[in-house]
Image (cartoon, rainbow, N blue to C red; front, side):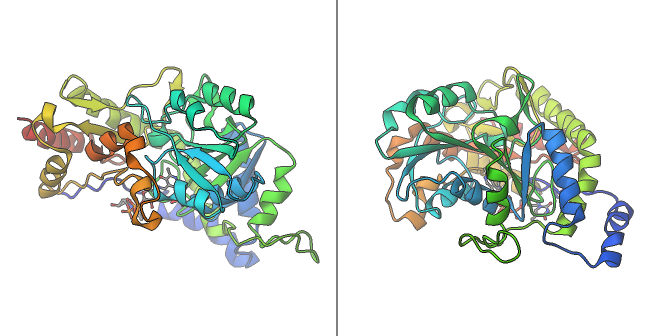
Length: 370
Ligand code: T4K
């Protein structure tokens, strides 16, 4: 019995990567925005159809920098959701800002836009919303509210690389969008990330931010950190980009197979096929309500584990319950997020997952049904 993990990094052929990094042995130029970094940046601007892409060593620092670049008032409030990876909330708090948690909607698990306005105070300065699992937020409504109240909008698009909505790239919404190119993502640079934006005035700022605030040879304009993507990461990205369409097509086949088994099982909830969205098939979350399915999420997860299948609870626990925040947030204010986080399980999904594997996973799941 082969072990199946929740995901498995997409990788180019060994020879292809070696060929791509060969010239680094000639140049000895390994980091600090070298030629690979610049090439990948240009390729991504074209692919994502966005005026500017700034590359980072990981998605989290990309998000931290994107928020910092908005020049928000210290202690300002940011409306966000707790149904996400630690990174989203941490990026807000580490910028000296206060997360105000908005609930998610029960259909696609993105921010419930009907709840945003009731959370706005005179301290609210931005919205950080998550295209969770690659599901696109209600960008029109978020845009309307942001304009009405003069708020910045930053999208955590870690899961939404290559997704389009009404033919528009997921990179094009809000004031900035962050992508993660972590090993576990649809497109990876080993570790890596990017900020995408259209405001020309942010180009220099974001470039300086990831390089200690160094502005030109002899000027350090502010106290920046170090978050540059190195040349080996960029080389991996250049290779993986060549195979992206194929990787997404294979994921699509696996998702269709999952759906063929699970779509008509009324006792469970799948993530919807969103209207006007071209998906990247990043994750396959399933909601198991014990009262309907007869087995709890944890029981299904344990049964899968017994069969060598590693499903994961993305995202449990909610970020507003983290011990790190010492009970500052009232989780009862995000009841839908709480309900979903206690019941959701993301099933294995990656480009090399075979259809036989999917059949096996679904058989184990259906055996749990009572
Ligand atoms: N915002 C959101 C909404 C995010 O989901 C994330 C990251 C971020 C921001 C921050 O972006 P980054 O700074 O990470 O670029 C993983 C990832 O580390 C993390 O990137 C991701 N979200 C999160 C949802 O999942 P873990 O702790 O669950 O990963 P781990 O090590 O358990 O790996 C999961 C599976 O992936 C393994 O069972 C096997 C496979 N795998 C893992 C690694 C590390 C590989 O095939 N290759 C690998 O190199 O966090």
